[in-house]
Length: 260
Image (tube, rainbow, N blue to C red; front, side, top):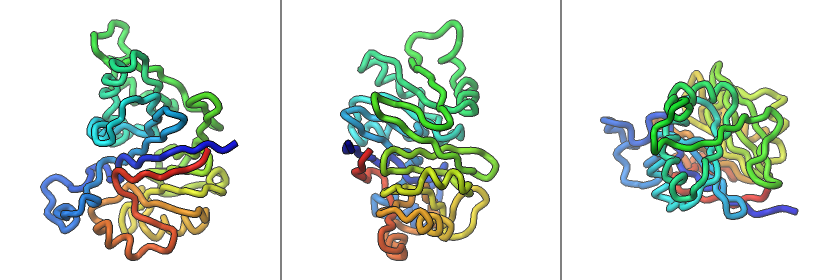
């Protein structure tokens, strides 16, 4: 039996965010709030529990903006700083909910977490540090709640393996440049696809617009949303104006219902 979920797009920007510090381009100086893009992340609301995919440097402000009062888990796609550097702020949920934060990560990300947050894993811990329950993401699927599983999808961010995730009819992919045919099979049948599209011109490690649209056409979801957008792309409304039917520019705070 299908259940109703809600995906809140917490951030749609690149590692620098938009506006970029000290930049005076027409995107960074735009008065449209949809052109303000914090670092890429989404929140899945499932049966009254919230689960965040990636906690970057804007995690605290994203939680405050969306008035999030409860958080069950954090799920990491990869170890780059714009995706993991907000983990320390789960302390607020530790204190409020009196429980550890479930943190899901594969082996390579766990190495980075131990390095960046050595004080969490130290033999002698300091009062007030984040309390986490670190769990390894399995290659096929993993459970984040009773009868609720996520399917990892491995994509390549140039030479770095990155995980996307599918839950029910929703697939979320960030920082992809190439995706194997085997991994595409896990995505096919998704009704909603959220995928990165950095800019119009080619990039070494990210889909550009043409690549993202070709991928969307191959998967053929009912709706697709572009995320991980650079200030070098264009303004929100200008991007929307050139997209085909059923493809939209995501923005911070966008809420997308889905079934799982």
